[in-house]
Length: 429
Image 1 (tube, rainbow, N blue to C red):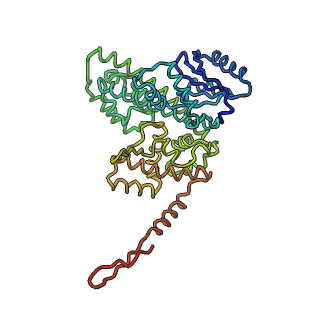
Image 2 (cartoon, rainbow, N blue to C red):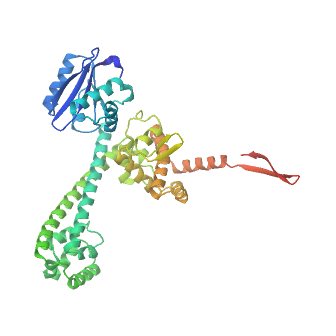
Image 3 (cartoon, rainbow, N blue to C red):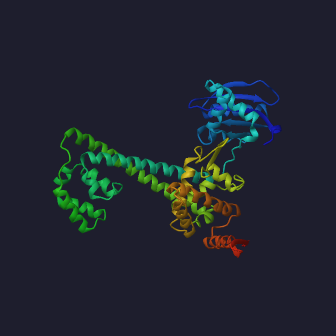
């Protein structure tokens, strides 16, 4: 976007109910300020008013949001050019203007406007990806959130069972199963389970595909078990808590299954499925996450280094005078970095060169995570080229390339004795 095509420069400090805005009309020096209600009707009236006032011209809008209610609401207007700004950028810009730390919503709106007006060339306009890709991006993140929620509830369930019914944790390998949840709903305490008829318990376990030999062992363990506590207050409260957690876990399992079905369908129909499904260790879990990580806009990243830095895989170098410090990147999309990190480790189980590279890093006294990040850094260059050229990954082809590079680097050193001294005659590759 050129500066000539912009009629209005607008900075918005978004909030939950009201957004502060600062506006500068092209050709004017005055900054207009105001508030905008966070309702579709108020936004429609405000944006339509700008379109009527400046017909056929663009409005540049900057806000501290790359995903959320406001930017999604503004995204439907064709005459708006949106510039998402990282909160850290605004924070540092504010500190440069106000070292005292003074802060207000109208003041932040004016700062965002100033940043947009003076440094628009340093900001990247928001260009949404395809509907299929954006849907996949939202779903894989939502699925991970559901999995994290399930992990939290499982930890709570484990802690509660340790308090009053620890035998369940010893009888089953994990509480994250349907049989454990149904068992706790039917017989929430050891006393309830011991009072139940043995045939009813056996039938219940059989319905959940527990082998007969295992059923006999469990029945003996149930009969010999001793209650951990007999405090009525602890037992009654724990039963209610466990029932709530078990039902929440059932809901989360169903939601994750629904997410998986939708993600699988979108992944297989995606135009880049052939590229990312060819990667070693990707599988049904990581393929959709890798597709979502790269997206379909080939001009979004000019080089592999661009996505390596954006994803937080590339290290950061800080130097001042004689001091130099290299550390991992803190400001980055955490889920994106997690995607590349997890997949790089999975690739070591399917790719021989990836495993060899990881082992080399470990032999150099690198930690597990540092070695995986180094492998991920290397993988991203490879995948970037496949993504740019729209070709699947070929392990055999890459292994052949590695062998050629290794052969080209082979160096022979010619040594001869001259008057009792060792002389290096030359090097040849």
